[in-house]
Image 1 (tube, each protein chain N blue to C red):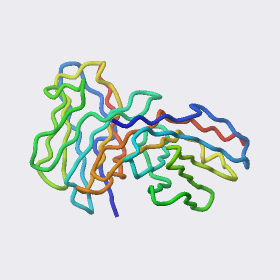
Image 2 (spheres, rainbow over the protein chains, first blue to last red):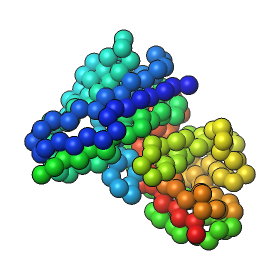
Image 3 (cartoon, each protein chain N blue to C red):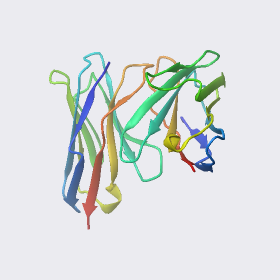
Image 4 (cartoon, rainbow over the protein chains, first blue to last red):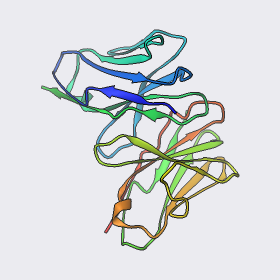
Length: 111
Length: 115
């Protein structure tokens, strides 16, 4: 099965700085890589995703990059704001299959 | 699109009782339902996968007689925790999916506390 590793487990940044979270995966057949933001007591919310035929995707302050050869992908948040504070999970999947989640990164944005 | 409704959002029950959690896909037909469990400060772990009209497939270590899953329709799936014990206290999250597509939408989760 797939194995997804995520780093770092905790991350603190000053408001306005950038935050980067990295994930690696093991199954070369995985072709869909979403990122989720989870606030306390709530279900995960999709914030951005990327498919294996694309190397980079950006949505305002959030971007994701994918390196298929190295089997790793990263989440980049620029100009961080206190409301960005949450736990972020990466995941890897194939169509119709379950998601394999990373272990999560607790991001704290310090005002 | 892809609106998911999960109820209840939280429940407290006594040991030995059963609790039912409902997950509805409001604007699409979910041929597949994934049920996840999340312990505090941990990641989501898949418990079982169910296809509409079929028996659920459980992950290793998940007791099928304890966690009963019903996926009788394309818009509703239920997870029943039977004879609940304190160690079953957790956050349960559903994720409906259309066959062949990615199950990228999650329910809001149910916080179960067994006392």
